[in-house]
Length: 227
Picture 1 (cartoon, rainbow, N blue to C red):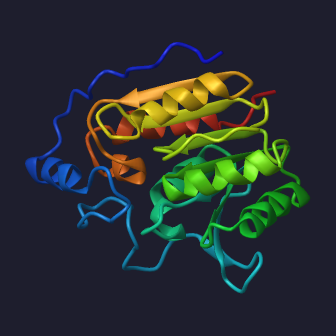
Picture 2 (picture 1 turned 120 degrees about the vertical axis):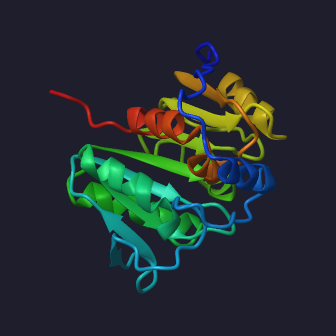
């Protein structure tokens, strides 16, 4: 059974008007918003992560070298580099992070296998929107592939997930908010739901006024275990 729905307080700092307008225009879709200094959407500059190969040449980015692995699957109109700020924060807390370019089962499985081969004690799979849907479909076929699951604005429910801990994040005013609750109620294991104020969809939440609580929840879910 899922734990009680988490409803974080709104940040004390008010986002600038331009950012609010951008978030409202972008909500409910994977289309990238105009740049507001955040990391979502296809990035224009060189990403900070190391370019690595999984299934095809250069089809992933890599950050960090920690004992807890994280695989990131982006939204449909995004790319691996769109996770840059979040991946850097994960690496800073001791994670090894791989963001895949392709949302295929082969790419995500290869990323998980690579992290385990390199010594990761546990691996989490994190997906946003289309990436969340692809991750959930993969886990319905291979429930024990990873040790932790985090989704941002999954678009549909699936059956057959494993009993690993899962965190389902969504904005409470977006059209797919109920999917997060339904997934937490139907999936086995210890599941949490985080419903954020507003209507920002998936990775767009990191460009809005809920960026801080969203990142805090994400980092907490994939934090390396302390001895």
